[in-house]
Length: 431
Ligand code: ATP
Ligand code: MG
Image (cartoon, rainbow, N blue to C red; front, side):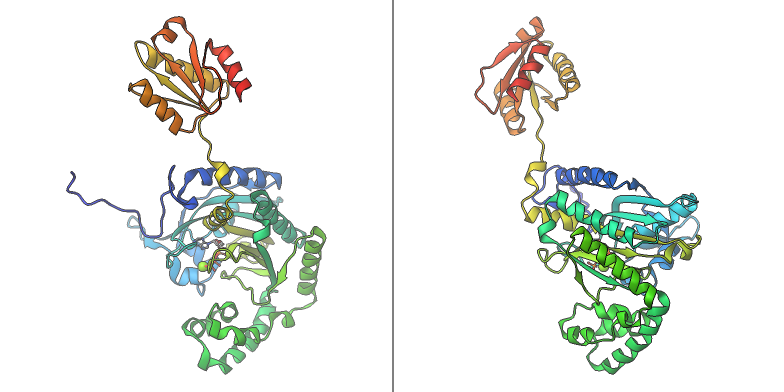
């Protein structure tokens, strides 16, 4: 026995394994989800982008904003000991996407529809649906003014719920954040209002009162709900253009038949949003109910050094989607056992098994070959446990005659000894 203490994974960061007792730690579910994602993103003409998980801290401070939860307290930031640069593990995907697009000039006369998938890092309190390394899939439409593209993003996210069988357990909330100048006029009124309620504000609200008062509206504290509900509404400060954008956006959702709820307190945690914002929420995951969030962020590209360019996007939390899928029982068909398990024993059998396995794979079957020799009985048990539909049995006679014995492990069919081509035909008939 080793006397060394085992090293464990970091709190809030999960291994994803071939076998696990829940969906978010089981790799089959991730792979199945990713397959759906590939087809789905392609069907909307979005193209894949992959950026590093580590970026200069300044990228996130400038884009997400320093008065946000993420930048204030959730980022994994450290100094690169080689050159003293401040680096951060990415807490979200949009900033990196925009950085890469600008760095490689992809927007030159060319709008872009992009999607990404990958791990994100936030140092938060872990609980069900909230982790320190979690995964997002996101889409960004860069260079389109909308509101048609805003509606396309909603149609796209809705299409994914339909593909996953989740359309019935999620609902869409929408709002508009107007433009910066409009928010500034509202902000003054909001601060005055919040100051009048100083005595009931909690720590978070007090901290945000002057840095990010809009976020106070999105408080989850039950004691503040009535106060937040009665606060001055941003809507009342919007000019014609912002209102028109919002109305067209909503009428497109109506035309698409996608139901939504207007929530004037939906503000989003990141600073870079304007105009349309939205969240897909579910009541089936307890406190961690938001599975997808997004909106328009027309100011970000300029903020990061590009020419002023409109943009919009969304990000989804994959763990929360998998938890929801698991709860709906919609995941069991994703585990795919091998088609064939090869059992082998005797002189020449290991090599013959390797060769046979290759021929069967070339014919399109997924094949596991028993490695090392144990009794036929043990091997048959392994074949059964693997979930394989068929077994191939190779002993000395099969090697000598260059034939294979095939057995249906799941249905009553007589065992047969055939050449490889006839075996392949027989498997296809039995299937
Ligand atoms: P929340 O209010 O739940 O903290 P957020 O506003 O911080 O969410 P976004 O930055 O908009 O979240 O990220 C988009 C989505 O990513 C969220 O709706 C959620 O599904 C998922 N997500 C965010 N943080 C986490 C986390 N720590 N663990 C798991 N999923 C997360
Ligand atoms: Mg958060």
